[in-house]
Length: 381
Image (cartoon, rainbow, N blue to C red; front, side):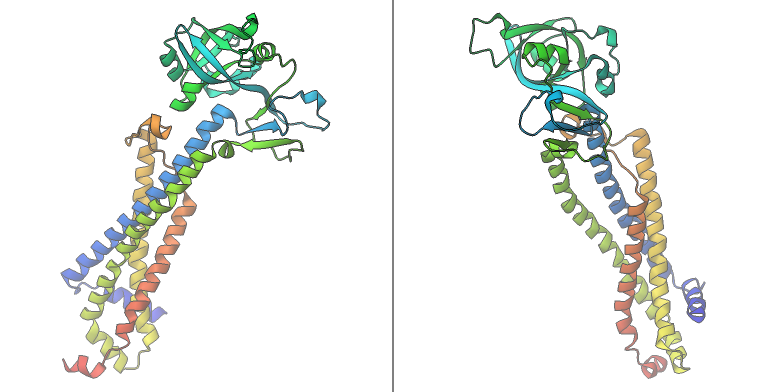
């Protein structure tokens, strides 16, 4: 192995190497760096986008929700199980809101007064301003209804609409806050009020829809309760993200793999330039294993150098993107206003290892022509 390394250094870094050989090595390194950087940036974008969406939805809905299997609303005191987890009681109902001549179907969520602070969109709300007649609506819904803070909207109870003689079929709620989550569909349909308001208006007494959990619980949820996690609640969205992974990864993997074929050129030029040297060494009994190791070392060296350069370049791009966010995207479509990226040391290491394996495979294939060398013909020429 020592003699192979010695010969590798002499042949690869020789001052007598042709200009074409040196330029080919530089181009090979740069093409490998570009392929590796492209693949790593794409993987970082996919992971960053998925994690950002998950994090954003978790701040809006909690990491999971615990509900009752048989009823939409239930009295937790009547459930014959022991439950103890750190969650926020909530009620969720579908209803109708109206302001002047504009109405909209919505989902209204009721929360305890002191628990609004657990939601990021309510960070600026003072608990003192939250009362029984308060309602918080999304910016898209506020624009559609043309309401402002301080206006009163009517909330209708769909269970009582059939009996128009009941005066309790609707209540007026004052808009205390207009929030913006960055997700247009969420801001268009979701509104919030206190849990006491909904329990009284929908005649639910002490009933709740379940609990919102902001921390992952290690305890198993007992039957008849069940837990629905955020990726299950928005399964269509995450399925869409996963569906994009394979084609994007495949395309950029091809770009990375194609860049490896530059190694063929570098190995071929090394073979053509040093063919006579190899023939002389073979005539003196140098084993094929020693000579073939030179090609393998050259391939691995160029690949490792190109991969490390590509990983460094991708890290630089990811760092600058996360700091300055120069790649912007439409928040109404993608739920975030910039392309999030998340650098992964594991993915980077995996790419380097795979690159070395591919380079070894390419150099091994190239050796088939080397073993066919005819010493007499080479030395004769």
